[in-house]
Image (cartoon, rainbow, N blue to C red):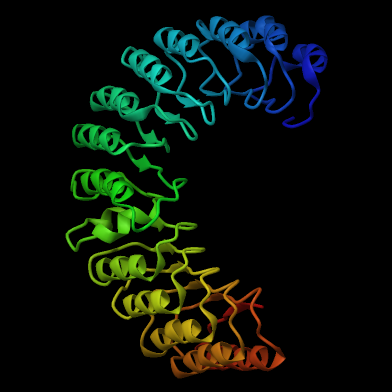
Length: 393
């Protein structure tokens, strides 16, 4: 019931019906500290509740303190979302609660003192597996406090984005060398510019630590920012990753080139997503060249990269030569016209053994002429090897 704005009085009526709910989502409902107090009796008697979301409610410091007092002895709740909170009260909760696994404290303007309070409490907590701190800034010292905690926590799995200063990034990187249990590092929300030396250092410090560590075999996905790309080297163990998601980061052609050089021979990534990355025709040329050598990429997302006809020709050339792995190609929102559609159609006809089964060309400038050419190519492939290609216009 998120966003219903039922307020404190509405919560009074709903509280009685929550005795047996396993998940409660009351975000953005105008609940104040008085409303939290109404949950007191319910939360103490409900032993099945696993997830409680009170994000975006003006509960204030008093409400957070009240909630933390209520949850100190609660052994059922595994996930708590409080995206507007008081850190000291939460720190005291973490010291005493041994059942909470996931903690989200996004967009709270948490600064140094809050970071150190929570990090200090986490040293005494052995149950937290995942922590989200998006939209907070603790400075180098605040992040360093988390680094000290991270070094010894072998049960921790997910480090979600926090705004990192270079000094803080170095501390996190040092911690990750000692802690090999972390499987997901989420830095995707920070749109650092490619030319920024400061930002480049942040990503390289952390990513080098993770990707060069052959023992970190459980890592399955790393959504990351553009600064990872300039320092890619052939020794990076991309074979450990299941997917590489770089959507919405302006890596531009230079970033695409750096990525291509690694993926040609050293990557075993089935899923590569580069939507909205501003790589343009030049950048997609590098990625298309990678497809000629890489035998594992099965899903390629190139949406909204301004490819136009010149860019569309590049993956078409790769499909014309050899393409045994790629099954899904997404070229939507790329201003592709009939010329590009014809190039793709010719590639499909030239290589009847093409593995592509799904081709998304939606929201382009392809007329009925181009659509007809692609339809003919699809029918030709089906006649030759009985492979159906779904083409979306």
